[in-house]
Image 1: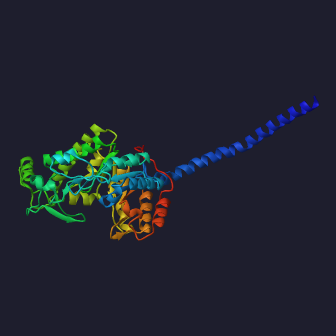
Image 2 (image 1 turned 180 degrees about the vertical axis):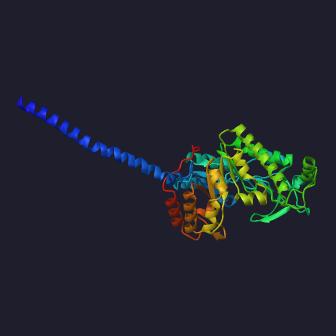
Image 3 (image 1 turned 90 degrees about the vertical axis):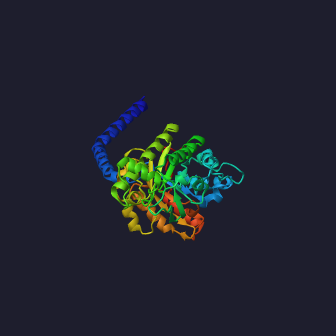
Length: 405
Protein backbone atom coordinates (compact mmCIF):
# COMPACT_ATOMS: atom_id res chain seq x y z
CA UNK A 1 0.00 0.00 0.00
CA UNK A 2 2.81 2.38 0.93
CA UNK A 3 4.63 1.54 -2.30
CA UNK A 4 1.54 2.41 -4.36
CA UNK A 5 1.15 5.71 -2.53
CA UNK A 6 4.80 6.48 -3.15
CA UNK A 7 4.36 5.74 -6.88
CA UNK A 8 1.33 8.09 -7.17
CA UNK A 9 3.20 10.90 -5.39
CA UNK A 10 6.17 10.40 -7.69
CA UNK A 11 4.01 10.66 -10.80
CA UNK A 12 2.34 13.82 -9.47
CA UNK A 13 5.76 15.30 -8.81
CA UNK A 14 6.80 14.59 -12.41
CA UNK A 15 3.69 16.31 -13.75
CA UNK A 16 4.38 19.31 -11.48
CA UNK A 17 7.99 19.54 -12.59
CA UNK A 18 7.05 19.18 -16.26
CA UNK A 19 4.34 21.83 -15.92
CA UNK A 20 6.73 24.20 -14.23
CA UNK A 21 9.34 23.61 -16.91
CA UNK A 22 6.83 24.31 -19.68
CA UNK A 23 5.79 27.55 -18.00
CA UNK A 24 9.43 28.63 -17.92
CA UNK A 25 10.21 27.84 -21.56
CA UNK A 26 6.86 28.95 -23.04
CA UNK A 27 7.95 32.60 -23.45
CA UNK A 28 11.16 31.39 -25.10
CA UNK A 29 9.22 29.19 -27.53
CA UNK A 30 6.90 32.08 -28.37
CA UNK A 31 9.83 34.41 -28.99
CA UNK A 32 11.58 31.78 -31.11
CA UNK A 33 8.52 31.35 -33.31
CA UNK A 34 8.40 35.10 -33.95
CA UNK A 35 12.09 35.17 -34.84
CA UNK A 36 11.64 32.19 -37.17
CA UNK A 37 8.78 33.92 -38.99
CA UNK A 38 10.84 37.07 -39.39
CA UNK A 39 13.76 35.08 -40.76
CA UNK A 40 11.46 33.26 -43.17
CA UNK A 41 10.15 36.58 -44.48
CA UNK A 42 13.66 37.90 -44.89
CA UNK A 43 14.58 34.80 -46.91
CA UNK A 44 11.52 35.08 -49.16
CA UNK A 45 13.32 36.98 -51.95
CA UNK A 46 16.03 34.31 -52.06
CA UNK A 47 13.47 31.51 -52.10
CA UNK A 48 11.60 33.32 -54.86
CA UNK A 49 14.74 33.10 -57.01
CA UNK A 50 14.09 29.40 -57.56
CA UNK A 51 12.26 29.11 -60.91
CA UNK A 52 8.56 28.39 -60.75
CA UNK A 53 7.79 25.15 -62.62
CA UNK A 54 11.50 25.05 -63.47
CA UNK A 55 12.40 24.12 -67.03
CA UNK A 56 15.42 21.83 -67.36
CA UNK A 57 15.37 21.05 -71.02
CA UNK A 58 17.49 19.99 -73.96
CA UNK A 59 16.95 20.26 -77.70
CA UNK A 60 17.45 17.12 -79.77
CA UNK A 61 18.47 18.37 -83.20
CA UNK A 62 19.31 16.88 -86.58
CA UNK A 63 22.84 16.52 -85.17
CA UNK A 64 21.34 14.03 -82.70
CA UNK A 65 19.77 11.90 -85.41
CA UNK A 66 22.18 9.01 -84.84
CA UNK A 67 20.53 8.72 -81.41
CA UNK A 68 16.95 9.49 -82.43
CA UNK A 69 16.86 6.76 -85.10
CA UNK A 70 17.88 4.01 -82.65
CA UNK A 71 15.44 2.67 -80.08
CA UNK A 72 18.31 1.44 -77.88
CA UNK A 73 20.14 4.78 -77.99
CA UNK A 74 16.95 6.67 -77.24
CA UNK A 75 16.40 4.44 -74.24
CA UNK A 76 19.93 5.18 -73.00
CA UNK A 77 19.55 8.91 -73.65
CA UNK A 78 16.24 9.43 -71.86
CA UNK A 79 17.39 7.25 -68.96
CA UNK A 80 20.51 9.36 -68.58
CA UNK A 81 18.54 12.61 -68.78
CA UNK A 82 16.22 11.31 -66.06
CA UNK A 83 19.15 10.40 -63.82
CA UNK A 84 20.65 13.84 -64.44
CA UNK A 85 17.33 15.38 -63.30
CA UNK A 86 16.35 16.97 -66.62
CA UNK A 87 12.60 17.20 -67.19
CA UNK A 88 11.94 18.27 -70.81
CA UNK A 89 13.01 17.17 -74.30
CA UNK A 90 12.47 19.32 -77.41
CA UNK A 91 12.93 17.01 -80.43
CA UNK A 92 13.09 18.53 -83.92
CA UNK A 93 10.15 17.56 -86.15
CA UNK A 94 10.38 20.16 -88.98
CA UNK A 95 13.75 20.98 -90.49
CA UNK A 96 15.18 21.74 -93.98
CA UNK A 97 11.83 21.22 -95.67
CA UNK A 98 11.22 17.74 -94.21
CA UNK A 99 9.36 16.26 -91.27
CA UNK A 100 10.81 13.78 -88.79
CA UNK A 101 7.51 11.89 -88.74
CA UNK A 102 5.12 10.52 -91.41
CA UNK A 103 3.09 13.55 -92.46
CA UNK A 104 0.04 13.57 -94.70
CA UNK A 105 0.15 17.36 -94.78
CA UNK A 106 3.71 17.29 -96.11
CA UNK A 107 2.83 14.66 -98.70
CA UNK A 108 -0.12 16.74 -99.95
CA UNK A 109 2.26 19.68 -100.38
CA UNK A 110 4.53 17.56 -102.57
CA UNK A 111 7.15 16.55 -99.98
CA UNK A 112 7.87 12.87 -100.72
CA UNK A 113 10.25 12.09 -97.87
CA UNK A 114 10.27 11.89 -94.10
CA UNK A 115 12.74 10.43 -91.62
CA UNK A 116 12.31 6.93 -90.14
CA UNK A 117 14.21 5.01 -87.50
CA UNK A 118 16.66 2.17 -88.14
CA UNK A 119 13.86 -0.37 -87.84
CA UNK A 120 11.55 1.63 -90.08
CA UNK A 121 9.77 2.87 -86.99
CA UNK A 122 8.21 6.25 -86.17
CA UNK A 123 11.01 8.21 -84.46
CA UNK A 124 8.73 10.71 -82.71
CA UNK A 125 6.33 8.08 -81.39
CA UNK A 126 9.23 6.04 -80.00
CA UNK A 127 10.86 9.03 -78.28
CA UNK A 128 7.60 10.18 -76.70
CA UNK A 129 6.79 6.70 -75.44
CA UNK A 130 10.23 6.12 -73.92
CA UNK A 131 10.47 9.61 -72.43
CA UNK A 132 7.07 9.35 -70.77
CA UNK A 133 8.06 6.07 -69.16
CA UNK A 134 10.99 7.96 -67.61
CA UNK A 135 8.66 10.83 -66.56
CA UNK A 136 10.09 13.37 -68.99
CA UNK A 137 7.81 15.58 -71.04
CA UNK A 138 8.27 15.92 -74.80
CA UNK A 139 7.50 19.10 -76.72
CA UNK A 140 8.11 18.65 -80.49
CA UNK A 141 10.07 21.52 -81.99
CA UNK A 142 9.31 23.14 -85.37
CA UNK A 143 12.87 24.33 -85.79
CA UNK A 144 12.74 25.87 -89.27
CA UNK A 145 9.35 27.59 -88.97
CA UNK A 146 8.89 29.60 -92.19
CA UNK A 147 12.46 28.95 -93.36
CA UNK A 148 13.12 26.33 -96.08
CA UNK A 149 15.93 25.50 -98.51
CA UNK A 150 15.34 27.10 -101.89
CA UNK A 151 16.06 23.74 -103.52
CA UNK A 152 13.48 21.86 -101.42
CA UNK A 153 10.44 20.23 -102.98
CA UNK A 154 8.20 22.62 -101.08
CA UNK A 155 9.93 25.69 -102.56
CA UNK A 156 10.07 24.22 -106.06
CA UNK A 157 6.44 23.02 -106.02
CA UNK A 158 5.04 26.24 -104.58
CA UNK A 159 7.12 29.20 -105.76
CA UNK A 160 4.18 31.52 -105.07
CA UNK A 161 4.47 30.61 -101.37
CA UNK A 162 7.86 32.32 -101.10
CA UNK A 163 8.41 35.94 -100.20
CA UNK A 164 11.21 38.20 -101.42
CA UNK A 165 13.30 41.30 -100.83
CA UNK A 166 12.99 44.55 -102.79
CA UNK A 167 15.63 43.42 -105.27
CA UNK A 168 13.72 40.22 -105.98
CA UNK A 169 16.15 37.93 -104.13
CA UNK A 170 14.59 35.23 -101.97
CA UNK A 171 17.28 33.90 -99.64
CA UNK A 172 19.31 34.70 -96.57
CA UNK A 173 22.56 33.11 -95.43
CA UNK A 174 22.93 32.13 -91.78
CA UNK A 175 24.18 29.36 -89.53
CA UNK A 176 21.78 26.95 -91.28
CA UNK A 177 23.17 27.87 -94.70
CA UNK A 178 21.31 29.60 -97.52
CA UNK A 179 17.53 29.43 -97.19
CA UNK A 180 14.37 30.92 -98.63
CA UNK A 181 11.38 32.07 -96.57
CA UNK A 182 7.77 31.02 -96.82
CA UNK A 183 5.46 34.01 -96.85
CA UNK A 184 3.84 34.07 -93.36
CA UNK A 185 1.05 36.33 -94.68
CA UNK A 186 -0.03 33.95 -97.46
CA UNK A 187 -3.16 31.91 -96.55
CA UNK A 188 -1.83 28.73 -98.19
CA UNK A 189 1.39 28.95 -96.19
CA UNK A 190 -0.57 29.46 -92.98
CA UNK A 191 -2.78 26.50 -93.85
CA UNK A 192 0.25 24.27 -94.46
CA UNK A 193 1.99 25.19 -91.21
CA UNK A 194 -1.27 24.81 -89.27
CA UNK A 195 -1.79 21.34 -90.73
CA UNK A 196 1.71 20.25 -89.71
CA UNK A 197 1.23 21.52 -86.16
CA UNK A 198 -2.26 20.12 -85.59
CA UNK A 199 -1.15 16.84 -87.15
CA UNK A 200 1.52 16.38 -84.46
CA UNK A 201 -0.89 17.27 -81.66
CA UNK A 202 -3.53 14.90 -83.07
CA UNK A 203 -1.34 11.91 -83.97
CA UNK A 204 1.00 11.86 -80.99
CA UNK A 205 0.84 11.97 -77.21
CA UNK A 206 3.03 15.08 -77.27
CA UNK A 207 2.98 17.46 -74.32
CA UNK A 208 3.01 20.57 -76.50
CA UNK A 209 4.51 22.33 -79.51
CA UNK A 210 7.50 24.66 -79.73
CA UNK A 211 8.40 27.39 -82.24
CA UNK A 212 11.71 29.21 -82.25
CA UNK A 213 13.32 32.26 -83.87
CA UNK A 214 12.45 31.06 -87.39
CA UNK A 215 8.73 31.46 -86.77
CA UNK A 216 9.34 34.94 -88.06
CA UNK A 217 10.52 36.85 -91.14
CA UNK A 218 13.73 38.84 -91.67
CA UNK A 219 12.73 42.48 -91.98
CA UNK A 220 14.11 42.75 -95.55
CA UNK A 221 11.31 40.48 -96.82
CA UNK A 222 7.68 41.18 -97.66
CA UNK A 223 8.08 42.73 -101.10
CA UNK A 224 6.47 39.85 -103.00
CA UNK A 225 3.38 40.49 -105.12
CA UNK A 226 0.92 38.98 -102.64
CA UNK A 227 2.13 40.98 -99.64
CA UNK A 228 2.45 44.23 -101.60
CA UNK A 229 -1.15 43.87 -102.80
CA UNK A 230 -2.39 43.05 -99.29
CA UNK A 231 -0.58 46.04 -97.77
CA UNK A 232 -1.94 48.34 -100.49
CA UNK A 233 -5.46 46.99 -99.91
CA UNK A 234 -5.31 47.59 -96.14
CA UNK A 235 -3.44 50.90 -96.06
CA UNK A 236 -3.89 52.49 -99.47
CA UNK A 237 -0.13 52.77 -99.86
CA UNK A 238 2.75 50.81 -101.28
CA UNK A 239 5.18 49.28 -98.78
CA UNK A 240 7.93 51.75 -97.80
CA UNK A 241 11.27 51.29 -99.52
CA UNK A 242 12.84 51.53 -96.09
CA UNK A 243 12.53 48.02 -94.63
CA UNK A 244 13.08 49.52 -91.16
CA UNK A 245 10.09 51.85 -91.38
CA UNK A 246 8.33 51.53 -88.01
CA UNK A 247 4.79 51.28 -89.43
CA UNK A 248 5.88 48.72 -92.02
CA UNK A 249 7.58 46.66 -89.31
CA UNK A 250 4.50 46.90 -87.09
CA UNK A 251 2.09 45.90 -89.88
CA UNK A 252 4.09 42.78 -90.74
CA UNK A 253 4.75 41.85 -87.11
CA UNK A 254 1.04 42.17 -86.31
CA UNK A 255 0.18 39.86 -89.21
CA UNK A 256 2.51 37.20 -87.83
CA UNK A 257 1.01 37.71 -84.37
CA UNK A 258 -2.50 37.21 -85.74
CA UNK A 259 -1.44 33.91 -87.25
CA UNK A 260 0.20 32.78 -84.02
CA UNK A 261 -3.02 33.52 -82.12
CA UNK A 262 -4.98 31.41 -84.64
CA UNK A 263 -2.39 28.65 -84.36
CA UNK A 264 -2.65 28.66 -80.58
CA UNK A 265 -6.42 28.37 -80.76
CA UNK A 266 -6.15 25.47 -83.19
CA UNK A 267 -3.76 23.61 -80.89
CA UNK A 268 -5.82 24.24 -77.76
CA UNK A 269 -9.01 23.12 -79.51
CA UNK A 270 -7.42 19.71 -79.99
CA UNK A 271 -5.56 19.46 -76.68
CA UNK A 272 -6.36 22.16 -74.16
CA UNK A 273 -3.42 21.35 -71.87
CA UNK A 274 -0.81 21.29 -74.66
CA UNK A 275 2.15 23.55 -73.86
CA UNK A 276 2.43 26.32 -76.48
CA UNK A 277 6.14 27.01 -76.24
CA UNK A 278 8.18 29.75 -77.91
CA UNK A 279 11.97 29.95 -78.09
CA UNK A 280 12.97 33.26 -79.76
CA UNK A 281 15.96 35.56 -79.61
CA UNK A 282 15.99 38.43 -77.11
CA UNK A 283 13.16 40.87 -77.78
CA UNK A 284 14.83 43.82 -79.53
CA UNK A 285 16.56 41.49 -81.97
CA UNK A 286 13.46 39.36 -82.51
CA UNK A 287 11.07 42.26 -83.14
CA UNK A 288 13.23 44.79 -84.99
CA UNK A 289 15.17 42.35 -87.16
CA UNK A 290 12.74 39.42 -87.53
CA UNK A 291 9.27 40.92 -87.01
CA UNK A 292 8.68 38.50 -84.15
CA UNK A 293 6.72 40.32 -81.44
CA UNK A 294 6.87 37.53 -78.87
CA UNK A 295 6.23 39.92 -76.00
CA UNK A 296 2.83 40.68 -77.53
CA UNK A 297 2.18 36.94 -77.73
CA UNK A 298 2.93 36.64 -74.01
CA UNK A 299 0.66 39.58 -73.22
CA UNK A 300 -2.09 38.05 -75.38
CA UNK A 301 -1.83 34.90 -73.22
CA UNK A 302 -1.06 32.53 -76.08
CA UNK A 303 2.37 31.47 -74.78
CA UNK A 304 2.60 28.87 -72.01
CA UNK A 305 6.38 28.89 -71.67
CA UNK A 306 9.22 31.00 -73.03
CA UNK A 307 12.84 30.03 -73.63
CA UNK A 308 14.97 32.93 -74.86
CA UNK A 309 18.06 31.89 -76.81
CA UNK A 310 21.09 33.68 -75.36
CA UNK A 311 24.07 32.09 -77.02
CA UNK A 312 27.09 34.10 -75.98
CA UNK A 313 30.38 33.50 -74.23
CA UNK A 314 30.70 36.73 -72.26
CA UNK A 315 29.06 36.29 -68.84
CA UNK A 316 28.50 40.01 -68.31
CA UNK A 317 26.62 40.30 -71.60
CA UNK A 318 24.72 37.10 -70.79
CA UNK A 319 23.58 38.45 -67.40
CA UNK A 320 22.61 41.83 -68.86
CA UNK A 321 20.36 40.10 -71.40
CA UNK A 322 18.60 37.78 -68.95
CA UNK A 323 17.96 40.79 -66.72
CA UNK A 324 16.04 42.74 -69.37
CA UNK A 325 12.60 44.10 -68.47
CA UNK A 326 10.72 41.81 -70.86
CA UNK A 327 12.28 38.78 -69.20
CA UNK A 328 11.19 40.00 -65.78
CA UNK A 329 7.68 40.71 -67.08
CA UNK A 330 7.35 37.29 -68.68
CA UNK A 331 8.55 35.21 -65.75
CA UNK A 332 5.81 36.74 -63.60
CA UNK A 333 3.24 35.10 -65.90
CA UNK A 334 4.66 31.85 -67.26
CA UNK A 335 7.61 29.47 -66.83
CA UNK A 336 10.56 31.27 -68.41
CA UNK A 337 13.98 29.90 -69.25
CA UNK A 338 17.23 30.68 -71.02
CA UNK A 339 18.56 28.80 -74.02
CA UNK A 340 22.21 28.01 -73.25
CA UNK A 341 24.78 26.86 -75.78
CA UNK A 342 26.37 23.59 -74.64
CA UNK A 343 28.59 23.37 -77.71
CA UNK A 344 28.68 22.94 -81.47
CA UNK A 345 30.44 20.35 -83.62
CA UNK A 346 33.53 22.49 -84.17
CA UNK A 347 33.07 24.91 -81.28
CA UNK A 348 32.97 23.24 -77.86
CA UNK A 349 31.82 25.10 -74.76
CA UNK A 350 33.50 24.47 -71.42
CA UNK A 351 31.65 23.11 -68.42
CA UNK A 352 32.87 26.12 -66.46
CA UNK A 353 31.05 28.48 -68.84
CA UNK A 354 27.90 26.35 -68.81
CA UNK A 355 27.84 26.23 -65.02
CA UNK A 356 28.34 29.98 -64.67
CA UNK A 357 25.45 30.68 -67.06
CA UNK A 358 23.16 28.16 -65.37
CA UNK A 359 24.02 29.66 -61.99
CA UNK A 360 23.23 33.17 -63.23
CA UNK A 361 19.95 32.03 -64.80
CA UNK A 362 18.74 30.33 -61.64
CA UNK A 363 19.74 33.32 -59.51
CA UNK A 364 17.36 35.33 -61.71
CA UNK A 365 14.57 32.78 -61.23
CA UNK A 366 14.93 31.32 -64.74
CA UNK A 367 15.02 27.76 -65.99
CA UNK A 368 17.41 26.53 -68.69
CA UNK A 369 17.45 24.52 -71.89
CA UNK A 370 20.60 23.36 -73.65
CA UNK A 371 21.47 23.34 -77.33
CA UNK A 372 21.96 20.46 -78.03
CA UNK A 373 21.91 16.88 -76.65
CA UNK A 374 25.13 15.46 -78.15
CA UNK A 375 27.12 18.47 -76.98
CA UNK A 376 26.13 17.90 -73.34
CA UNK A 377 28.71 15.16 -72.82
CA UNK A 378 29.54 13.46 -76.13
CA UNK A 379 30.89 16.06 -78.57
CA UNK A 380 33.25 17.88 -76.24
CA UNK A 381 36.96 18.14 -75.50
CA UNK A 382 36.27 17.45 -71.83
CA UNK A 383 35.76 13.89 -70.60
CA UNK A 384 32.27 12.42 -70.44
CA UNK A 385 32.68 11.69 -66.75
CA UNK A 386 33.65 15.29 -66.04
CA UNK A 387 30.73 16.68 -68.04
CA UNK A 388 28.20 14.34 -66.47
CA UNK A 389 29.47 15.16 -63.00
CA UNK A 390 29.10 18.85 -63.83
CA UNK A 391 25.46 18.51 -64.83
CA UNK A 392 24.75 16.29 -61.84
CA UNK A 393 26.17 19.00 -59.57
CA UNK A 394 23.95 21.61 -61.22
CA UNK A 395 20.80 19.52 -60.79
CA UNK A 396 21.29 17.36 -57.68
CA UNK A 397 17.55 16.90 -57.13
CA UNK A 398 14.55 16.40 -59.44
CA UNK A 399 12.41 19.34 -60.58
CA UNK A 400 8.95 18.17 -61.51
CA UNK A 401 6.95 20.27 -63.93
CA UNK A 402 3.17 20.55 -63.71
CA UNK A 403 2.90 18.91 -67.14
CA UNK A 404 5.04 15.92 -66.15
CA UNK A 405 3.55 12.44 -66.19
